[in-house]
Amino acid sequence: MPDDFIRKSQAEREAANMPDLAIAREELGWDAFRSWLDYLPGGRLNIAYEAVDRHVVHGHGEREALRWLSKNGDRRSFTFAELKRETDRFARMLADRGFGKGTRAYSLLGRVPELYIAALGTLKAGGVFCPLYSAFGPEPVRSRLEIGEGEVLLVSPRTYTKKVAPARKRLPHLQLVLLTPCADQTPEGTVDLAQALGETPAEFECVATDPQDMALLHFTSGTTGKPKGAVHVHEAVIAHNATGRIALDLHPEDIYWCTADPGWVTGTSYGIIAPLCAGATMVIEEAEFDAERWYGLLEREQVTVWYTAPTAIRLLMRAGAELAKEHDLSRLRFLASVGEPLNAEAVQWSARVFGKPFHDNWWQTETGGIMIANYASMDVKPGSMGKPLPGVEAEIMEVGEDALAPVEGVMQPGHLALRAGWPSMFRTYLGEQERYEKTFQDGWYLTGDLAMRDADGYFWFVGRADDVIKSAGHLIGPFEVESALVEHPAVAEAAVIGMPDERVGEVVKAYVTLHHGHEPSEELRKQLIAHARKKLGAAIAPRQIEISDDLPRTRSGKIMRRLLKARELGLPEGDTSTLESTA
Ligand code: ATP
Ligand code: MG
Image (tube, rainbow, N blue to C red; front, side):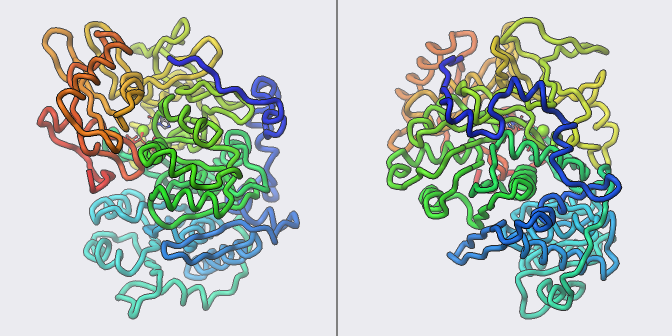
């Protein structure tokens, strides 16, 4: 484990919203974070009110809230006052049509302003919003609408015809289909969104929801199996707001870009709610990843806080440091990453190329918000996911038959558990209550991930419990092996799995992709095996290494080790609804 800190200066610490984690852990927690919000009379709480209306009430309506960059170079900008107006109008349009509290509204839109307005407007109307990734195929769309009993759907005319219309008869709950952009003709059973909004006044009083009312439905990424529908309530905004300020260090002056699609929890918690709560300006990029375009955006829009994912970072590394250096990225002040383990190599690369390290943070769809993070005021240990947020109690546990026990000693792997009861904790897996209950034991939520804690209290990701490899009595975490492989100059990405072995139980097999300028060869393969042995020792190093063009990953960019394993062993592939189509 690399132990070399990337140190923060005194000035950096002082400028951070949370200058000192140890002090904050004493002084802050969920009670304090509750008081950071306005609430509605009578202890009521609505995410959209806190994200949008509150700023208008406090006289900040003229500040830029949302800046949208379209695929073809158009841009649109909304102040908080304009966003309030348009979300009021959307809520009113739903309410006028009889879709009030509890309405399940889904979106299949790409990253267009209508999606953001619909999300916040639905919440204002007291409804439940469920964003789906627009590139899902017809069956994943149908099954998710069915599980969540979707009543309202926002969708483009093309997607509607291709993916929804054929299944419409089997979706009895679906009553209102809103199409955008405007089509030449609206198919039967659909409504033109612009027309519907055009007929509706922007007058609406935000529904005073209870903090425990259901607000969001998010499907997990499907990395380890069939996606689960995690339910979140309005008080999740306590965590979105607090973590946006503390873990992402968002200030109202920031220009912030979260690269995640709202179809994944990151793109909603941190691509809609947290930045708006902080009063920052959020940039929305409609187009998909392109290294040159991304650097251009960061430079042109003068982005100050950037939240992205390891896959994108690895792609940027693959594109080379020279490309980054062609752009003036001096406005960037805080870089954060989530979704997969971030290799130490990537953190060091960013420190070299951007002059600032990426700050890894850990959370899941189920946790609703960041739980463990590297903070602006805290020295970074490359490869570590940081320390728990004030208010969050995280523990490394040994899971026995009917009892949990904290793992003794430092850097000992165990199950990562969180003390249950934080506000953005999921409230059920929709339709799978039993499965939900099984994730809790003795007042702890078991995350399904394995981690370790070092002597300084930093947490280190080991692997998903499902992906851990057991070999000759050793427990091998895929992340450690993958991190060692990507330290080799030829290797861009790595994924490892356990292969059944009669003698030792399992042996490690690795799949790697190469950086540009490196060609697969037997010699390179041998070099990689030797490199891994040197770094990891023979017991842990992969016995086999396969050089691939690409790795199977979810649309949110997570490597699907279970597919590599199923393919290797000739087993059924299971649910592939979230698989990126190119892999
Ligand atoms: P599914 O639960 O359907 O298999 P998923 O777990 O990938 O999919 P998400 O909730 O989107 O769905 O992802 C959360 C998981 O992603 C975490 O449990 C963890 O395994 C991984 N993860 C997220 N952030 C980090 C991080 N910083 N370091 C390591 N792993 C991370
Ligand atoms: Mg999961």
